[in-house]
Image 1 (cartoon, rainbow, N blue to C red):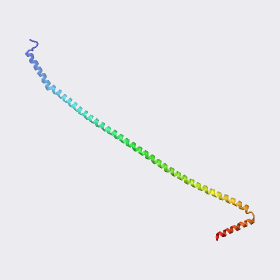
Image 2 (spheres, helix red, strand yellow):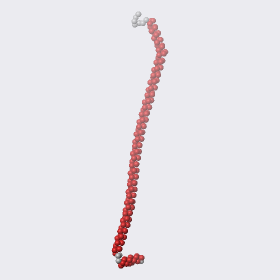
Image 3 (cartoon, rainbow, N blue to C red):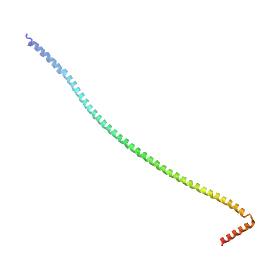
Image 4 (spheres, rainbow, N blue to C red):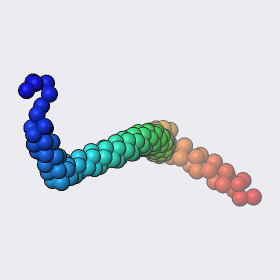
Length: 166
């Protein structure tokens, strides 16, 4: 018996047992292993597709988000510009109303001052007339204290009246 060369009976039983093991593996083991590998491959492929879809959706959402942000910024600028324009127009309107109101008040004050001036002038004229009549009365009383002077004054007045009638 040589150690390197096996016996023919041993070789037969080793080949037979190897064949049975290969048959059992081919019949029952490999289909299960291949099925599991196929399922694993399918799962990995699906996961990659879903990851690609998720990445694409994320890119879409990201671009939509950027568009929304840009639109929001534009809308913000538009609203701020409109607010500035509205503020300026409100200030302008308020200034115009204040100017008109001021002119109205000034005109009313001028009219009131004119009325008060006219009233004061009338009052002064009345006082002057009353004082003139009082002074004239005192002068006439003093001057016409005698009957001869009274008659002379009456004759002059009658002559003046007769000249004006003719």
